[in-house]
Length: 113
Image (cartoon, rainbow, N blue to C red; front, side):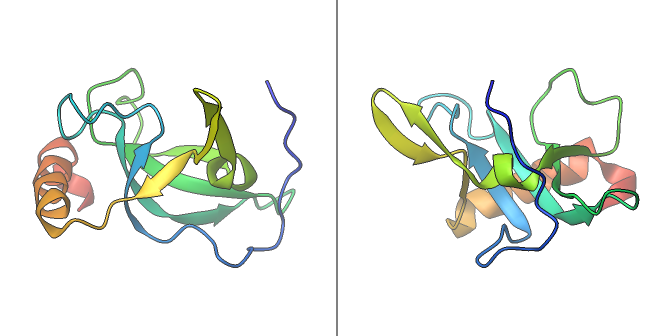
């Protein structure tokens, strides 16, 4: 596991709110596998460290909480897959996919939309 330094200033560009695929997303699988809604960037009130605040849009073990957090530097870094550097999270721009993921989000998190 890589050691990540805590980011305390929002870098430009930073993650924007919206829907993202994690690099583990399988395009041949369900449209929502490894899909996430990024809520925004949060700041730890004691350390000033920044994190990506997000929630999964597929069934997983973290559905017992409202949101998940990941250190911002980790969220924004590149990972190597099959010898190629790819972003850990890629923003979804397709309007049809965004509409489908919005419905999924509203069904999974009805009190938080």
